[in-house]
Length: 103
Image (cartoon, rainbow, N blue to C red; front, side):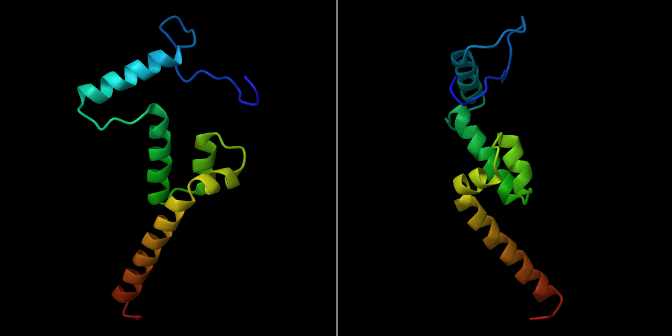
């Protein structure tokens, strides 16, 4: 197990830990059923984090949801998304100044 803690992402009907392959099969069936782009279950984690950043969620909250013990880990991994979110914030602020007639 190394430094990673083992936890139950999901459980079987009997309350036992599911085999990761079972989760992958379940996920792939849903992607196919709903004609969604093929991404791994782990990539869904990155998508979630990036969407939260772009919606302005607090980085500490995102970091906690991802299970990172340090916010710096989250910032290092998702720095590219932060830059994009910063550009959006600047555009919103610029629009606000234009509406108020300050510019």
